[in-house]
Length: 260
Image (cartoon, rainbow, N blue to C red; front, side, top):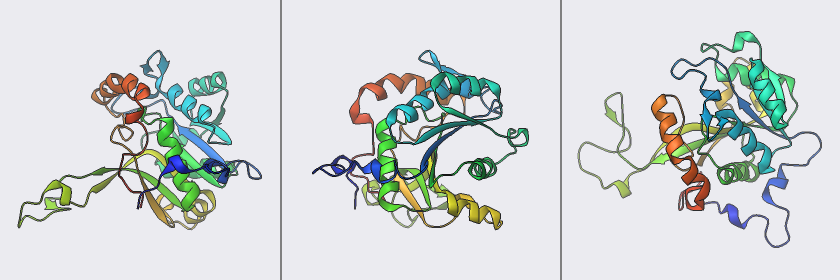
């Protein structure tokens, strides 16, 4: 069953994001992770996109959406602290030990959550510049509705897929029409949400906090799920950026895609 975000807040009821926002304390935090080093694309968070560093687009998207009680940039480098101050958001300096490529996202999320009280943490990646405010509103609305422990953004791929040489969502015994296939749900990490208490409890117990508790999936469009890892990825994002920003048909959850 699909989730129609556009109907939330009608009939005199409070907007859907008020279910999370505005309770006692900062309950709804957006965190934008950024490190200076990058193995495949040097300084990608600072690459200019339409006259501004890539990370600034993520900052403004979170700041101007009205969805979050606080917006934080999480980095080890002073360059990002300066940008955060310029844009009027907060800065968390992670330890140098968590700044290298060998550091996992789970480690720096844990370190951040130990320092900042909240009910839910929303991680929004700067390397997903085609993720729109409409996409964010949909994502936060799903968390407001379900209040799960983990919410992952996924792109539904309705095509045949293999893993380790074996078919994942089809059989080699017959040709299946694509509309009959069960989509492969590819995690994009464009946006991710965690319940702070559950994440910290799992991490402290030595478990995998990233997927701890009740996990839900929220579909985003293929454009919103486009992640910049290489120069080619950046070129694609640059070519499509203005189109996505100007065309409402390309923003938000894909039509007819259910949230499960």
